[in-house]
Image (tube, rainbow, N blue to C red; front, top):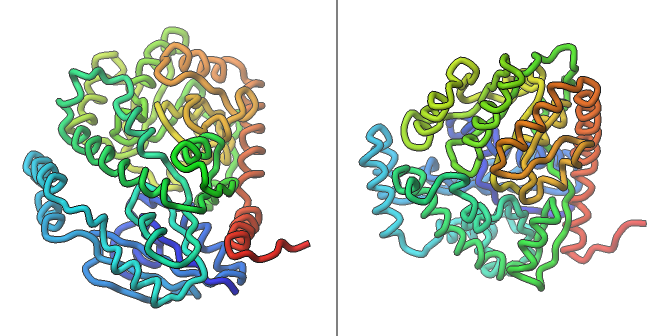
Length: 429
């Protein structure tokens, strides 16, 4: 049996329960689901490392055959920053100071290597290049697989979306996050250059990797398991609320929310009853305030509903009720939100950016439109609203494609194949 040690920025359910922390928005659900399926296969003994400022001391425990390592991350400056959470102006200033003074340690690598020594894995599997974990690739004498999620340099390039340059410094929190992303992108470039084995989901992330490291060995890992709630109910045209749109957002300019609001304003000329429901946390300050101001400026107060944070079960209900799901981002690799909508069967409109075209076959599994083009986005949504048979076809096509890519058995088999290739195990006949 192979022993694999995973490193993830997402807290697994067992870790959240053990440490008594909330579900963090259920982020990284696909990592948890993939880990559960892989451990259940009986072919891989799994360990999972999570480093976070929420962890106070190095902790190791076992549950359901998986070993978990919780590693404290951050020092006194991060602890002070958390205490300033209720005072946003001071917190932003403190964050800026923290970025200036932070040494180039890139996190608790020593504790990560301690976990490696204790678990004695055959290989390491690092999920994502956004964090510091990828720096382990040159510090351990083991095969290391690095899974590509987003590519920070590309996200940073598109970060401000349609926001003009003169307005950007006015969004203090977003500006600080942008500066941090630029800083982390430099570290990511080092990780991409120094790593040997990588896995990804799209032709786009493969191209980004090969630009940075032509010698890298790239494995296509197909697609990753999503949260189980999305594999059940199926959208139907009879159930959906006509002329209704659902989307999930974060208060980041590159998510394209402003363009979607402009598209809704155009769409309402033909569909006066059009309704947009937006899931996700939207703060009252910073870019969140700008989104709310834009809603008022466009006269959309009565047809845009901000429903706040939503759990997986709530998202499924929203997708079943919506006539269309829209992803308006200026950059994505393989957006899980679109895949979730496809699994449910909700007709999708998505911007043709990054690797999105690899999961949305235009006019078969959804509709693609140019990023930043409100008129084109409105036209795609209108086609779904106006053509019942076409919407039903998109629903069936998207669901068929998503189910084929995201089955549990296919995911486990592919991961095992990649691990065998890294370890030099001959392929089975």
